[in-house]
Image (tube, rainbow, N blue to C red):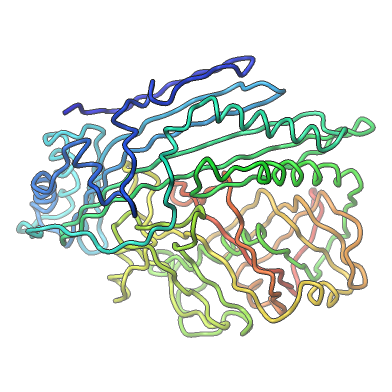
Length: 512
């Protein structure tokens, strides 16, 4: 058996003519097709010799000094990036990550060790580090392991790693050409493709052994337009847990048209007046505000530590009765969906706010034990080198009774936000500021001039209580390069919402 630690390569070409067969750098062993329904076929046993007896030995070492629970998290991830700028592919790179993280849990204490070497000696050494948090008699390891039933939310026709690099290069070149063809004002285009195959195996001391193949892809374009010496730019992307074949000509046209049209529209944009005013958040991508300003406050670790506004709000009204918020790991092919989380808990749908009432939090195993509830499948980590945290998956607000036109017509003077960009959030309190990348004025119930150079600021929990109208046009953002950051870790997520009216937010120019 060959043990792989880490390999990477970088290949770049000024003319974008590089063609590198995937098998030439990933190796034939890495291209094994997944079993139907995930990795139930035993990829880690087949490719790296990770059998039940080896796992029992390592788990026993992790519990050698006591502990309530121990877990092995094996990961093998293959990643590729292809970037184009100025009509040329200027970056094509790939990376292979392989290793195991070993966790021992004692109450609220966590011991953690990891190794890139999948040898018994290396894993026993990492397990000893994890075990050092306890000082008692040895804990018990289950005599046999079994896999819980899992959903299949992102099956692929073929592994992403079998798609030739030449096809990925051609994709970004095609997107570049479509952007330039969209408008004569386009002066510059940047395009990026990324794909990732993440195979995981989770083995726990209480007898669960679960495998999954988690794909991730995205394609993004940034278009810069020039007119009368001025430049404006905008971007759009598409992605999720999707196969290469999902990036059809229609998808490329959508990415090109949205990014180019939004950049061109900014030439006619005005700066809105500053102050407190009604804000209509359009459907889809504006759900990032829900994610950042509200969703984090519903992660159980912040509530367990009394750091969240919602720590004493279970069973209480936090929004209008038209508001229902869920965090869902079961949406097909969406970036935050999970057949199984990084603790071996099956993917599921979790209702957080039901008709305005806060009914639950997002839990990993530790917080679930603290609250006396079942884990919700939200235990996530960036890689085998990181500890688990309660994290969001696909967080969104469900549609309501109004139409989008009714929401807009109800506003005498305000702004309509179509998309937002960079923002800052104070997670515990929920205070936020986001930059509006695309939007319009609302005057006498109608959308008028496009706007630019504007921030919206407020408090997430207060914003939730100020949602007074919810439309019936819910859209889940199709995905892209965005990832959620928390505790120094980034994981893929998605978000969405219908068109909603927030009665009052602070609107200010870029220098406000």
